[in-house]
Length: 207
Length: 207
Image (tube, rainbow over all chains, first blue to last red; front, side):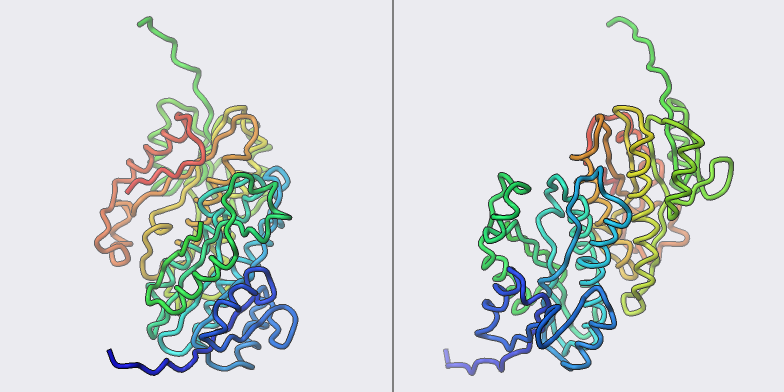
């Protein structure tokens, strides 16, 4: 086989770059891609709960080859204590924040670009205090399956659905007893699979 | 086997009783239950998008043995035309309308009572123009699985996820080409399974 030139580095916008997952995704992607790290603070600021903030970010950056999200907040609380306002936190942040990132970002993706969102194991396997997280993750997974069949210009969309991270267990262990925590690097690997693979509408479960 | 007395009729609040599905559910349940038919119009008025309206309904009715919902609206539209506001329609109506019905209704259910919500096949099998419906249905199914493990006093919660109804095909056929439409009576039957069965956290798929 003749030697082949490496493809030129692609540009990946990584939202939520400052978190446990975001740092791992950045490390995973940095050797092969030009990663543009965005978060609530720092050089490239974005608040995904605010569509105007997402639009401003893309106006600064211009076109990219991939959008990867490692951000999204939900309220954890006992079902008995959940209110309409507490459910709205997750709907506005982790759900519609990522949906808006995908919907706005689509117009800033080069042909054949990709969108990778973050869901989580609670979509399938509930825990106490996790009703809102389950709801939001279930919504995102179904959104990804549906959006995949309507995106234009060969743009793909997938989600990564990880188990709880070993790195997060110091704080989360009481809520995830019995779950097989995974190294966050395994979840980060799934972002490469989404970005550099060819599939769309997939939920990469890293359990 | 000795003859047994039939159990006393249980009271079932049926929300969305006026629609294609609601009428079929009422017919399915009426022979064995006291069905309280609620909808936007009529004797027992309720608008599930308004928590105050749900609360007023229960204050009028008092305790019930089961809550069954056959109501919930989402916006159908091409992904390219979907906006934050159009996604919000389904989140406010079919999703949070039913979640609020479950959360408020829980306190008005007798011990061992049940809640049955409506989702739909688009949670798993997307169609063009169905992104919002998929998202909302996926959210509801994950919510049901999660809420089931935290509900008190033996209260159960399930969802019915039907295929497109044969009765709705005159209007919906162009969007559901190739789907095996089901008689709405089959979906109604699943409500009996939820209400009179003993399972919780189930999605009864009627495909």
